[in-house]
Amino acid sequence: MTTAPALERVAEVSRRLRARADGVVAELWFMPESQTGYPTLGISGAAGTFGGRTGPLGALPGAAAAALLVPLNPAFTGPAVDEAWAATTPDELLALRERTATGYLAEIVGAEPEGIVRAAELARRAADAGPVEGHPLAAAHRTRGWTDDPLVDVWRASERIRERRHESHRNAWTAVGLDGCEICVITDLWRGPLISSVSSSWSAAHQDEASARLRDRGLVVGDEISEEGRGLRDEIELATDRQETEVVAALGGDADELLALLTPWSTAAVAWASQQFGA
Image 1 (cartoon, helix red, strand yellow):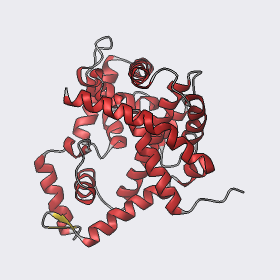
Image 2: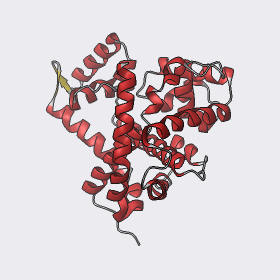
Image 3: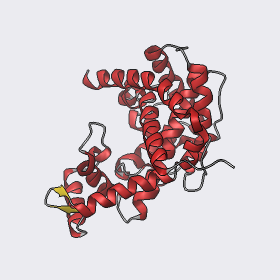
Image 4: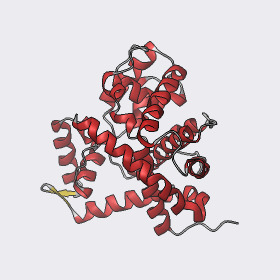
């Protein structure tokens, strides 16, 4: 029987793995098609982005898809998903989205960067690990299987890894009674706002109202996170980590090797994305 890794190790590896995976797929959010859309399918960039994320589950109604994509504002994501399925099918969108994104990734890191075969082997192992309970989106992405191209498989695995932790996180913050805007506000106070913070999907008025609710609970005092709020937010992150235990266990002693292989590709993709953002 495999011994479960200590929570400290799970936290370290799963957080770093999510960050590296998020970097590998950074082109998804910043490639031109994510801004201007997919003309051959007749959809906007937002429809391609959010339809693509939930597409493995089929042509879900926008309201259902939006519930999976929180803490992004459902008023933003739901209509975009409805737009996608009014014009195209999940299979068509997923295929074009993957070809487009992995094409950019190949330009950024090369079609066969050194270590890609080993990285694909380890990334597949991580992406297929962990229970599916409470993780319907990650489970749906698993049904897509793997290809004979290790770069594409690293990309697929990275998307699966980030979607799984996203769902672990959603499970954790909804369990303590926070809503989507509240978790965005308290997270920005907890770690400092990031350029990629999803709080930007919520209006200033929504965020002010969420801040007032957090003050009522004693989680925010003035414009600062309270000691109680920091403790709650820390626990949300640990509750997220606990759900990633089997992913880290599946990698075992190979976790650091995978992280080392992904790091330069992740860094390069993020740098490319930053250039697109600043263009």
